[in-house]
Length: 239
Image (cartoon, rainbow, N blue to C red; front, side):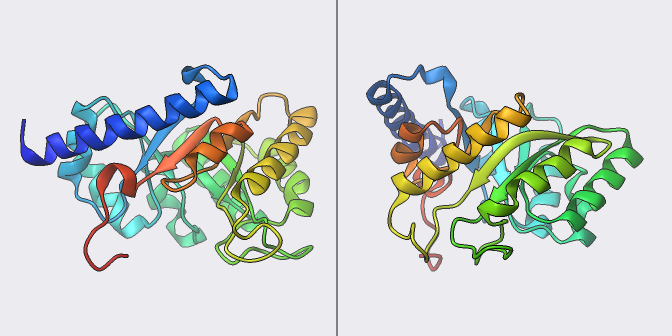
């Protein structure tokens, strides 16, 4: 085993311990939480090593980095998630590899995703990105639709040909009433999920929590956690 593979294996084991402990504390089964490793800024060689170590879900937030990486790993048994702010002119490229788009936050993007899904004969999973720092009718600092717009956008996705409404995603906000209050933020997301499932019962995916706050997300009920630096490390100069 190479030094890098040993490092990734050790990091994965620590993250697995954290998720398992969080599930136990919350009275949940470990199988209820899916680990999505965020591989942004890291090379395809690391993705290959992660696959060897049993990782099956990876995420990227920039198409220009993700597309060549996904192409280099096209034969690997992976589900690719797109988690960044997505411009409509990048939709065709992103749907070339991503099975799940976690950052759907506006009607125009729904239209573009649907058109491309139909063109390629695919069904694409979509999450509504919820911005808990957004004012009514506005988008969040890091993308996302405010809580008041979730229902309308979810209905658009559910009705769009080629798209599948899978649930909700959020990033713990840096400003607003939930800044620094991850547990409360994730609890609010779960309340929104409960409301969504009353209209769309199959939309039960809740993506929340990252390296620093995955425990709070699991405690709140997240089904997917997005972990980058705790698995891959922090690259020099990236902070």
